[in-house]
Amino acid sequence: MTLLFDGGCPLCQREISFISSRDKLNNISFVDIDAPDYDSGLYCGISYREAMGRIHGITDKGDIVKDVQAFREAYSLVGLGWFYAPTSWPLLRPLFDKFYEIWSHWRFNVTGRPSLDQLCKDRELTINK
Image 1 (cartoon, rainbow, N blue to C red):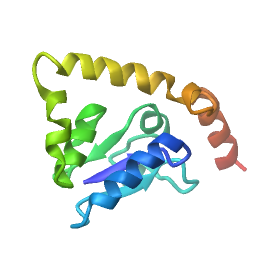
Image 2: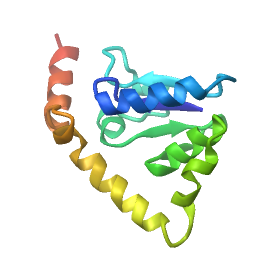
Image 3: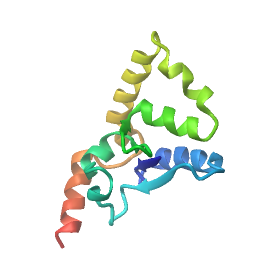
């Protein structure tokens, strides 16, 4: 699996560091979408804006997974699938999905980062230099 993450987000970095430390079999490749050389063409066309807006993963079969599903898959690959199992239970899944939707919207404010729009503008300016 390839997991696209925001390397400029301290909480995202912490989560990826945790997952990476458990990935003893190297089942996951980690791609920092905040890196200047992020190229959506290499990752199923997932744009910078899309990737920054919510977590995405690409399975070894080429399927795109995002949001809580991406975490479920990643944790499963590192032997911790049981940790995210409750997020797929029928009564709890909608709650976890809604929580992630809210979190993905507010994470920039919570972590002291510029808004998604501002990050995209800044990136565009950097690329067009």
